[in-house]
Figure 1 (cartoon, rainbow, N blue to C red):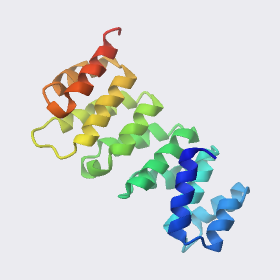
Figure 2 (figure 1 turned 135 degrees about the vertical axis):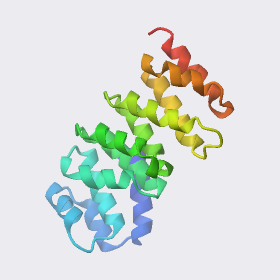
Figure 3 (figure 1 turned 90 degrees about the horizontal axis):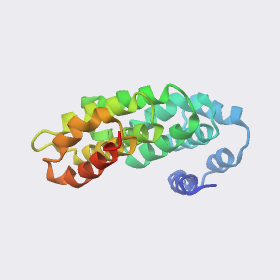
Figure 4 (figure 1 turned 90 degrees about the vertical axis):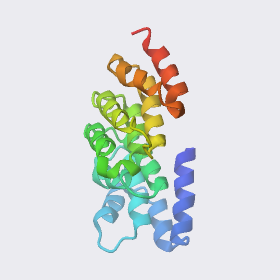
Length: 190
């Protein structure tokens, strides 16, 4: 079990009160039993998160939709766990879904983890979505600087030449300037 899995397991064990249901879902090796818990009525959120995470990390695409819903959740811990599992799921729909969440202005407060996921995926949708999201964040007094910084860092990691104009513009924003300068250095060779 890796660090992210341990962290999720401990958080959800506490959230569940170490219930018998948690012990059963955490211990089962049967992917069909886990998948059944995704759609069973009356399941608590912690149970759905646990089984979606476990299925996602195992590469079971039945977890895709629940993980995308969790990626857009208001709780940052749930978003982070969903992003981790989606990055390992291997579903070709993941990048499109993350791009849609990252560029949705009505949900920008929850865009941090979709932005980070796009950078990790390195998919064709990644750079265009990060460029769009960053461009929208480069307005005076934008309250979503963490999202903007994640976009700058992601664009630096992707080193896509299409990002040069928006990264150059980000140099004029003090909270982003250092990261934008580093990102532009990575683009020089391209």
